[in-house]
Image (cartoon, rainbow, N blue to C red):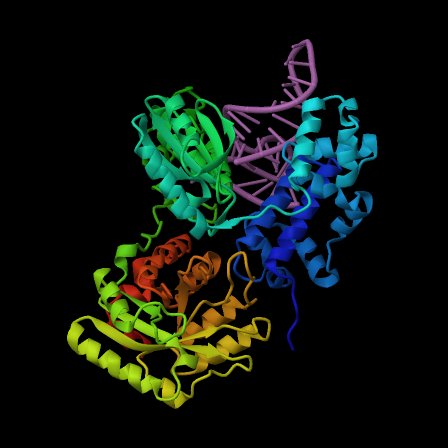
Amino acid sequence: MTRSLPRNAELADQLDLLADLSELLGEQGFRVVAYRRAATRIRDTAASVAEMALAGTAKDLPGIGKTIEEKLVEVVENGEMAAVAKRRAEVPEELVTFLRLPGLGPKTAARIWRELGVSTLAALQEAAEHERLRTLPGLGARSEEKILDALRKGIGSEAPTRTPLGVGLPAVRAAVEALRAHPAAVRVSEAGSVRRRRESFRDLDLIATATDPAALTAAFVALPFVAEVVAHGDTKATVISGNGLRFDLRVVPPESYGNLLQHFTGSKDHNVALREDAVRRGFSVSEYGVTTVETGAVFAAETEEEVYRHLGYDFIPPELRENSGELEAAREGRLPTLVEVGDLTGDLHSHSTWSADGKATTEEMAAAARARGYRYLAVTDHSHYLRDGRIEQQAEEIADLNARLKPFRLLRGVEVNIKADGTLDLSDDVLAGFDWVVASLHTSFDRNPTERILASIDNPHVDCIGHLTGRRLSKREGAEVDVERIVERALATKTALEINSQPDRLDMRDTHARLAGEAGALITIDSDAHSTSALGYVEYGISQARRAWLTKSQILNTRPWSEIDKMLG
DNA sequence: GCCGTTTTCGGCCCGACTGTTTTCAGTCG
């Protein structure tokens, strides 16, 4: 008997909707903030919050109290919070979309609705075109123009999109390099969510110090990739690249570079929590410095390390700055030493031309792995390409290569498909012959994914579960799996769980990986490379692992193969 | 609505920008 409980995303969306509706109705601001905080917390939680709410443990999560927990139970029982239903009856349905328009907040939207009777995007456009918005005090011609401009661009009719990290990171690095090459540049850094290596972003932030800020911003808006200049001042500029990415550059004074980098790296929630904590200790933190309230003394620093130290924290790596326990840990000196790319000793998921989609031969993959300093590489071609004697042929090839490449070791692996009925598409006899078996979902993601994965974990020949949910960023959601149960079983059977580094996968996601790590599960960071250059994708997997608070010792492939082999038994 | 090495009540980050204003509210990150 399986119950279908609302997903965390759904609970969070409903709280955000409640916040929007409450704001439009002019309700108390702090309550709205509480709803939004709770929504963020729920989105960042790996376990099922609906289940927690039913068990009465959701209120153990920071930002969730008795009242919100009750609202969550209402969603489980009735599909909707009573508070949402009540407000939806009062507020026209489309009004919340007004809030997506830049510059249009809840106060203004509410007045347009109440005083002009305008409550749809179409009516809003008409009102702006007929210059009726300017009849409201506080709104003028410029406001109407901005609203019309946004509506023409289609903003409001669809939810804002986020772009995968894999698209943004190379782009932001190229921009950093280009700016560093400019003679006026002193220091240039990526910032924002990309610096924290969040899996997706809305815009790409850069900050810099310069001998001549105006010259640097001028050079920035003239970079070859720039297709549109949205804003351009002496110390701040926003541009859009040819492929539609939005970049923000801020040039700041060198003496508070550390404070500013800290501020613009975020996250917002991290900064708010840090500042609230600072207030309790008699400090006031802004992007320009840390003020000791009693004396008025301002501490400005050129490095982030100094900023954190001044406030009584160990340095917090950007990947951890999500207000999910990092501040307390940094204060108590118990931040983990996060895993790094250089810690990896090998890769346990890769493909060769034995798979139809592989671009490099086994030998080329081995050479590339060796060039990265690896001591082993598991070639894990797809099971359905290894039929009709091809397994034996590949085994022979690998044996030959191993004789030549010693002490480097090619592992005979396979990526076996977890079928819709939960069985694997190779027999146990065949699986027993491999050094390393990765089992992955590739189809039927909505057909009992948890049970199918659990069955695979129980197979004694399966060493690792590949890309847990099968999601493809901005393409498909992936399977809704019960991570807690999977982690528990993986732990019991010594089955590893993979962090797949493909930029459009990043699967396990950060929150799942953190849960797995805290439970003590064995975790691998693999490239799933289909070409030699793609071995480098592990950088993304490492970032994901760091966001999950993982250390070197928690990652299986930071160890020699002999040790891994022994650990899995 | 949440939360507590000041507290179960009374707080709740901080500053910049914008458009509209003669001093500021609303919005944004």
